[in-house]
Length: 430
Image (cartoon, rainbow, N blue to C red):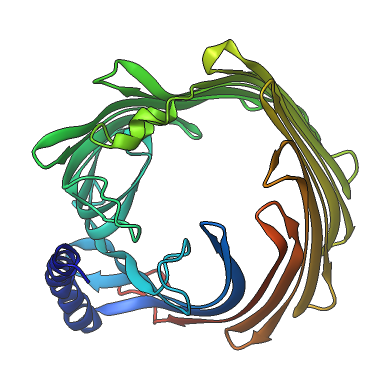
């Protein structure tokens, strides 16, 4: 392990040691009304392809979670502690599946003050919405509600280094101001800035909103503007109309510039400069209580003035209340490339505890990859709700793809969920 990685782990360890101490010593002293514990163990056997060499590897993954909610502390409402982490062992090191590693996804304490006008979150968390998109952050996040639907959120901290050793930056801060005039309607303006080695690596302004014009007609729109490039990294707008209780139609426009999703300090931003614009629409029709149809189409424009088409159709039929069969087809074509993807599936409940599922997916490529223009992969699985919080799953897939002469995957999973509900909070209505 190199010195830089050791320093990162040591720094992260010192930060999280304090939070773990607070969570493990202080939280149990308070009275928690709800405690949820989850554990999932996954064992997987599958091939790994790297530089033309195919190896069969074995991966064991453990995911754990802890949620302590409705902790009783004077002057604090909705106090809770959230923890989520995972670890993985691999028989193959330096693989595209990250080999042997572990990480903490979430570890934060959250509570509301001043009759819920101020909400504070401290620790490792996910900042979502607006210019932040989805930002994993070690820091603090505060939301203030002013009344009449107005509020503002502000956050600051260190972006989390991913397990691929990709750093989003050393310091990030931003916020979002919003207005919720009615149920289902919200308008927001946001800002995000990230600093790396004292250099500005990202500076975005975001705008987003959803407006319910009529009970059956709504509009959603969002856009993220890269301030340095004075160009939109991402923008989309959708109008949805529920014509009948069983028929919904929508129209949509989208723009994406992938190079503006990367930090300005990243060399990869030079190679990711394919803009994409799309305009189209679709519909969803529940023809009968059991039979449903969905379809959409988009006209595409990419760099160089090239035009293309993308479409999807899907049909589902509910055989019984808990058993469904369906088929899906997706088509994507531009002058230089194209792909057709076809899939059929079935999900069948043998009982309240046991469910079987299977699907077959076939893909046809316009341009060959490794001399092949298609792939076919089939998957079958069985799940069992054992009871008392325990569940199990066994899954396997096999087929051929352009990257493998033959591909196979075997997965076994066992999970456990435990919930403990305390007595009613003091002062609760009887």
